[in-house]
Length: 324
Image (cartoon, rainbow, N blue to C red; front, side):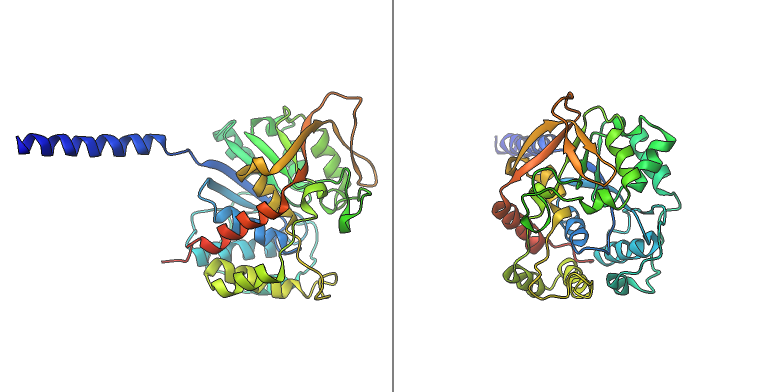
C-alpha cells in the first residue's frame, strides 16, 4: 500500500511540474535597434531589456553615426555578463563622431560583431519568425530606411514595432510646445520613409510626451552605484563618461531615460495611455497627428512615471546577471 502511495505521489509531482512548465509564459522575441553611446538613456534601456526575463533578445543592432564604436560597447557589456550568444550587429556608419562613452570599450576585442549587416540581420530574422519578433528602435532610423529600400513590406512581418520617436503635444524641457525630436530630425529623410511605410498598423510611437519626464534621481543613481554588480557598474561607468557630453556637464542636469520608456511600454503597458492616430513628419522634423486621416499607428501620450521608475529600478537592482 505504501509503495502504491509513493508511486501516486511521484506521478502527482511529475504532472504538477509538467503543468507548470506548460503554463510558463513564452518569452517575447525582441530586436533592439539603438544609438548606444550618445545619450545615457540607451545604456539604461539596454540594461532594462537584458534584466527582464520576459524577453528573448534576438540581437542588438547599432544605428546612426559611429556604429562600429557603438558595437564595441554592446559587445563588452554582453561579454562581461556572459551573454555572448546575443549577436551585436553593426548598422550603416553615417559619421565618425566620437562620444566620451566609447572610452569604456576602447580596445575591446574579445568578441566580434555579427558578419551580417543591419538590413540582412533584421530582414532575415523577421522572415524566419514572422509575426513573432518585436522590433524596438530607439535612435535615428537610417537602418529602417535601408530595410525598407530593400523590401517595402518587411516591417509588416514584425509582431509589433516600438519606436522612441517624435513629439506631439509636449517637447524637450517639459515644454508644452512640440519639439523636433532628435531621432526624427537627425535624419528627416529616413524618418519620413519610416513613418510613411506600411506597417500594417503594428507600431507604437513612444514620444517625448511620455519619455521627457522620466528622470533618474540622485538617490537612484547612488543606489545603482552601491549595487556594485556587473550591469549596474556598466551603467555607472558610462554615466560618468556621459557627463563629458557638452549638454550634460552641468551637474544639475538629471539624466532622462527616454529610451528605457520604450522598453517599458512592452513590459508594463498598463502604465501608459495610448491613443490611435495618423502620424506624419514634416521637412523640419516635426511630428504631428493628422486627424483627417484614418489612424495608422498607436501613440503613447501619458505615463505613470513614478511607478515606471520604481519598477525599472527594482529590475536593475534585483537582477543577478553577473558572469559565472
